[in-house]
Image (cartoon, rainbow, N blue to C red; front, side, top):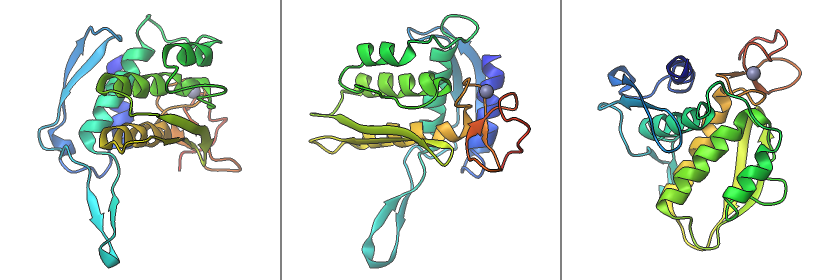
Length: 203
Ligand SMILES: [Zn+2]
């Protein structure tokens, strides 16, 4: 089940990624945060693409394949940590208590299906050290995916990458329940699994 979810989200989220054909899944192994999908993708560049535009301005491409795979594996580990996934009603409060440097007030101000995604991002950030005076300015859903606005006193490539990956992956995880999802066509743009899509087709 966890492996099926991993494969399904990959099939949605990694379309067009260089080296995707080298992705191999080797099974599931226990870890302190829950069952981790073991994978390798030797042909996927680890670095995020830098796009040079006119005037020498450099912008960053989407998160790298390995970053996406790592955070997805962490997300599913948190989701399946206690057997069949069930998001407790107090999940937001629990994240605020576990990660007080990262979340306060209403954050993460998104649906419960993304709770494990934000938890995975928070665990990844804490492992490397949260940048000095990190502040989450706002979290929300917009056009079907998550937004996580933040500031810090020091610039930190890793933090930037983790947070972009959380935002990017959210477009492929149901905001209601955490199953693989797609942004749906119709009057509203929300990321939903087939069960929660109310019959709306994926974009
Ligand atoms: Zn759902």
